[in-house]
Image (cartoon, rainbow, N blue to C red; front, side, top):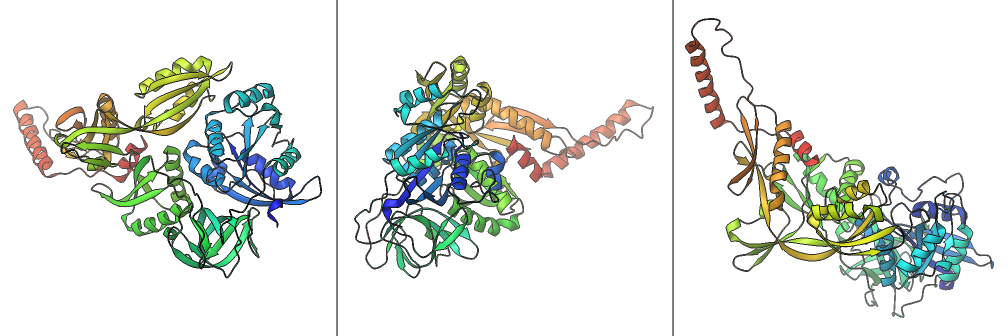
Length: 596
């Protein structure tokens, strides 16, 4: 199809504002899927996405739409995730488009993620078409949402389309606006083929299937192309598009979106944001998207050590489908061989673990999540530490710097006190507050990343009864009084339970871990001490009582010295046993503690 009749767009919004429902409606209205095939959340193909009601992967779909004027247009849609941890998926999708539909919930208004995604789209110079969704809800406030569009995002309120994806209201207007407002793709003027790789996945039969957007030239089977990043030349075996299932085509032309398969067998050979060009006459590299750096690290170990190789192969396949996920091999005294994995955030970590369990049937255990600390040694060298086991001895450390984030929290006015209290509890400072409208404020604050890892997002939601939202960005490093907290079981440190914490919070953390370990470590024939220590200083202790045989049962009546003699003898035996015995901590204990 000629480029003038092609439109590439993506849908951006805050989590749960109705992107996926709208994309389902567009697919149905353009006849891409029939009523019989129609189901809710059609593009969310993973079980996990359907269960949680969130989009995790960006999904490309090609639709054909006959406009009011009579021309037929090819519309290439990329449905994007809304959660802060998946913003890299959004930036990749946007780099393959000329325009974006911005969906705003009429009842909830502009939220933190809406602001972040609009800035991403504006950075890529995309045409933004605002859509106010869910206007059929009884508590929808369209006038206020239009006002927020103008005040917060500087987008004219009258340009917004009123819609309800659930009821099918405004779908035709949205399709016409895509054709009218979003510009057609333009050639880059390069001498030969230029195509951007924006996603990929592994197929057992075809090998690596690469999602591409053609910016110049055309792609067809039999062509010899070159991946500029890896320098590998391959022959294209098959090209096609998605509707939502993949189907083959004769060729992909300028401005079209689809997939190619070539003789690429290894997931490592395809780099996200790479440029595909003609093998003989290469074109310059397309501006891809910035490299993503993981923020949160956790060790993933197979529960059965024999599954190590199996886990390694599955992580490689998963990484191909999720380029922000990184891993490297490591070993632990307590857990054996495993991998140190990097994630963008806690939801990302949770999703990856769940996908390993479901899609690849892996039995895995994950260690407590940590972040990368910068340690300045006494000899002025700087060392990066992502695993507490590698933290140098305190006498070699000058200062420890921890990563900070700039967090934007949007909440209703009446909860501002609770929010400020929560931020200061997490060792953060509120930089400034902005009033967004008569009901809501935005707090801009600086927080340590390791404090918002676990329950920060959940606490915001519960304190504000679900009305609060947050978004964050990396904000460099700051020197902090961090210490390594070790857990000793029977005098021996267990590396799987070690963590790096702020000195003020170490005692509380140590007490909580010791209490949890007391519950899960089985009783031995002798008393087992569980201690939390910072260096040589013990800050918390719990004792698992000994299993005791009643040695005085056969003595009834008689002198007390007989009983005492038997008890002393038992005590000696326990002492000797303790000097030889080492506590065997069961796998379930690790899982329980890491869950806590």
